[in-house]
Length: 160
Image (cartoon, rainbow, N blue to C red; front, side):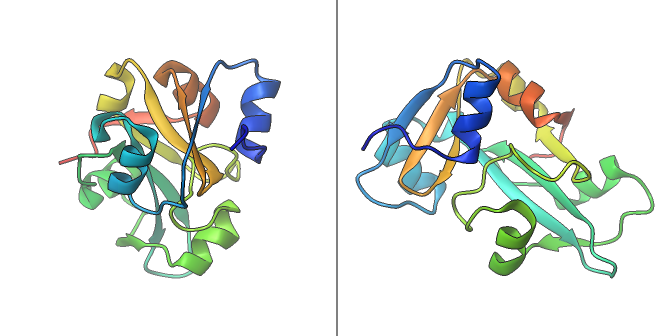
């Protein structure tokens, strides 16, 4: 498969960010399957998890942790501040409506400007990170500093 042409690769190209395309032999929708297809370790994978407030009106936050870690919802809510209520996973329909990506191919880039993006602090210490290209048939490898900058991400301890 050639390099995917998605809004993520177009953004990286427009910002002159170096990245490596990691094509898959089949569509993947889990960290384990993506790591295996890309030939990388889970510790370099970035899981992009869209959370929503349980109460209405709905607000969304993109929380990202490394592939081997679990997300601490309470830490995310605490970081966001007192006016954020209980957080839950967004549905597949909400993921696509809010991010433009299908579930399992979500990247922390190209999101609505009003959506907070929070990365676990461990992401910044990686040599390289892997994200979805926005296409279930390919991932992308890039430097964490570039990913953090382009995602306009805030760093916090949100993994367990």
